[in-house]
Length: 105
Image 1: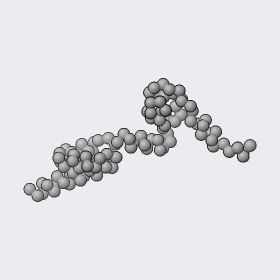
Image 2 (image 1 turned 60 degrees about the vertical axis):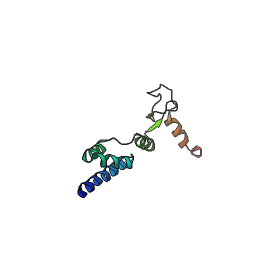
Image 3 (image 1 turned 180 degrees about the vertical axis):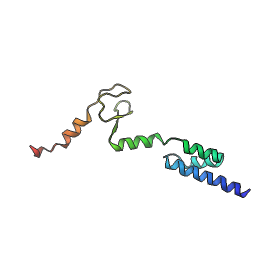
């Protein structure tokens, strides 16, 4: 009986580690693995990463920005939001203007 409990605890710990690495709740991963055993571990392995974590990485990479109206993630070069249709100011022109040193002239 004790060996079964130890195996189920191992599934719980493995589920917690997997979901923590995916940016999700470690406690939820432990509960999933402990209650469902190997099935819970498979579910934890198949789950996607946390949407907020992916959004944070996309913003930090500099390839994306948020629309000021609808807050959806869009490409930096976009001139119009594909979700709400808001006209956007081009970021390239702004960053190039900021990178020009007036002492160069």
